[in-house]
Image 1 (cartoon, rainbow, N blue to C red):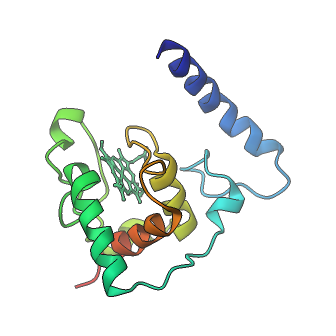
Image 2 (tube, protein in one colour):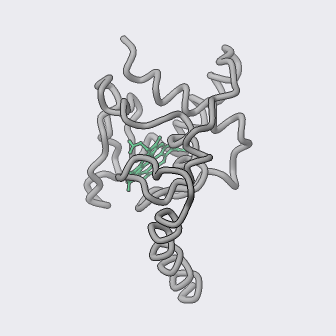
Length: 138
Ligand code: HEC
């Protein structure tokens, strides 16, 4: 545990340095750990009723306790973990993020957010990106 924590903090320190030496321009400054190639990825899934129902179910189990059932960023763990989450029901909340960035964050986690990648298939993650964006629609 200690060892992995140590490795994790090493990785955090390496992140920005690697980016500066990369040939391509860095993505949004707020998310320095996301590789440019991942940020540019286009969502490959077409949302279907069945896949969206699955995404919604997984969201209810794995995400709603932080991000809220409606995506408003007011889940039940927010107070305890002192989280400051974006309100996805506001259309502007995610306008600076690409689908690739959202997919990467869901897959690998970020800050206090745990990774979903070992529990979900890539297509399921992309469907969750569609779901997350959909919270802003009336
Ligand atoms: C323990 C609480 C927690 C859980 C559970 C959680 N998240 Fe997050 N999530 C966060 C936090 C905190 C951030 C902001 C991370 C940062 O910017 O450092 C975040 C950021 C994000 C982002 C990036 C956009 C934004 O608003 O910053 C997406 C997309 C996201 N989460 C989706 C999900 C999905 C989908 C799930 C379920 C598979 C999930 N999260 C589960 C806490 C959580």
